[in-house]
Length: 373
Image 1 (cartoon, rainbow, N blue to C red):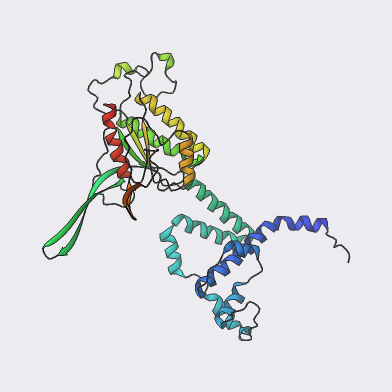
Image 2 (cartoon, helix red, strand yellow; image 1 turned 45 degrees about the horizontal axis):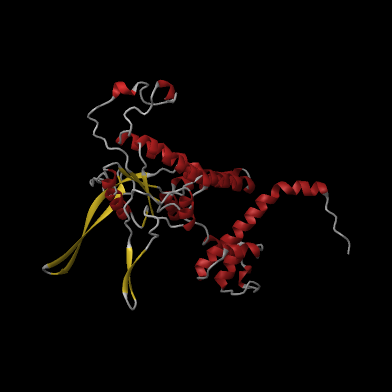
């Protein structure tokens, strides 16, 4: 058997189309599997589908599904009529109601969808796929890079339960919401400031290189506005001041002896929405810690809440976060009932600045104020 001859010119002519062909093949194959997996109540593993990838057709698969076929090699005599094909495929086309839902869910993604459709109609499928993928990747990177945290305030909620006609059971609890009510909370509710130089800051995306600067710049600017420096004059002379200092070049002339703003005491970072942290973000956090320690003229306590990933905790510990000499040990416990009833800590007691929830972190931050005073 002779070795097949591959014409170099034909090969070079086909190479530009290979990426789009592979993408279309994978998209169509997985889309068919997921669509009819949902209809017929079976689970699809995309990785398995990629390994056993084969050519597929929406029309043929739809016809076989309508006819009740259960094996991939079954022949269907009923599928010979074109009317059956049209009827089967029409069920896969989304209607105006679905498009309206797309718009309500995400207008930007709805726009990308129509851009892909228009480019495909007036150009070709390859360009439509490339434009849609490029726009989707740009949107994803933009969302990650523009992620910003929110400062939280405390509100006390009352949960009332009617046990009987004349018996009401009431419980009180603290929850923490953004001051700008960006999470949809009632704007008539005014959250209470943590006060005493304590700030609660929540991150909603993974803490990564693209968004680390945005996260930290917003936090630092808010802290500078609401606190005063630990040193009256942070620089001994004009030569020590940075050239791009945003404040006055002569701060001693603008000192206010009745400045009632507190000094920065503690920062509580809510990492509930953070699923990953990279090296650059950790280094950014270390740099900000040093900057704020110099600004406050003492060691600022950094409390962390919602560390759902052991690697995030490991990264923070490696750079000195989690432990402190001037922090009170507050940790949540769980009641175990075996032969003897005992209380056991939920988190590592050697890391007093890692907390199970914001309320515990806030209590610990307030308690450590007495140590400074």
